[in-house]
Length: 450
Image (cartoon, rainbow, N blue to C red):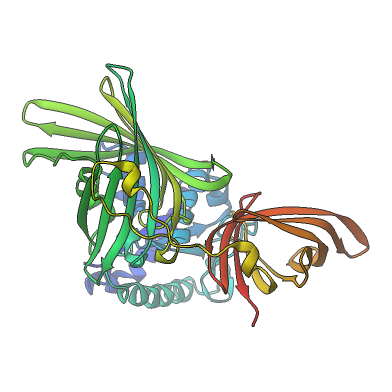
């Protein structure tokens, strides 16, 4: 099976797309690549649904950058946002291809390496064929790199690691009775090879009982092909052999999601699942929010509704790797006796002392390098390397509350001196690496300077 290629472009640049497709014909004949564009949508199909479905299955996404592309609301608000979500999660490679000169420096993809060589737009080359050949060479190299990855890069479990886990709250609202039932869900990758990720799924509920399942998720195909297998793991029921499921994506976008004290910059999608079992027909409506911070399948929140029957809401409340949580064991129906068993997590206040090289990753993907030193019980110093302002020198006091680190003091740059305050909630802690989210939603990674 060839690498799946998605081309996102403005229709005003149709001639560039046609010329480009001629240049990678040999790669298609070799079986190295399978491309898809919206010109392949058949008559009578839902065009938005078709576009989003193929984008979500693509290994490589090319963005044909031009003034018309930048002006297109659909390209910018739907295709680019979903492409960048997949790029951040590591399940697709996004490459800007400069077609015509355009202002794209403030775009979400502005930090990505663009082609052709030297980031010179194709329209500015004296020989258009030479420019297209240059792009094709980059694409061939990238295809070989992607092909070397075990499994299917369109499946987020391909990049998961043994020991990755999530813990979520499940709420079932029953429409006919008005009752609500609650459960705790724990999912963890307990084994993985080049072909399969083995996932253990535990549910704990005083009202619904406890359950334990182990499922194998194939890595050689997109995750949506295993949707029925994963869905059945959340309940005690198996999907009947005569059930047929048709999945239709009907809308999507981006959204800032607040869960507890955490902020997630997410991509969301609405999906309708038509489930037919003999004469019975049910429509399951799903809305899911995806974040690159969440391991396993990237879902931070999921709502499923069957009209007139129930609505289930799953919200991730914790996640991490095996060094922060031991997998619980179900030994009885007494939830309290086998509730979450945690390893001793190192106290933040005990390990924060010393100097740390830090990366602050903004929602746009821009990285701000920084250093922080905590060389006394409550005094810190630091430097942020701002691309626009230059070095920003920080100093003040710090304190720890649970797994939260707070700063308060001053910041100085150029001739200015201003107050400074910040907070970070850490979700992964070890002696030499700290990972967390700032109060303003940036991802923060701190590595001890030895």
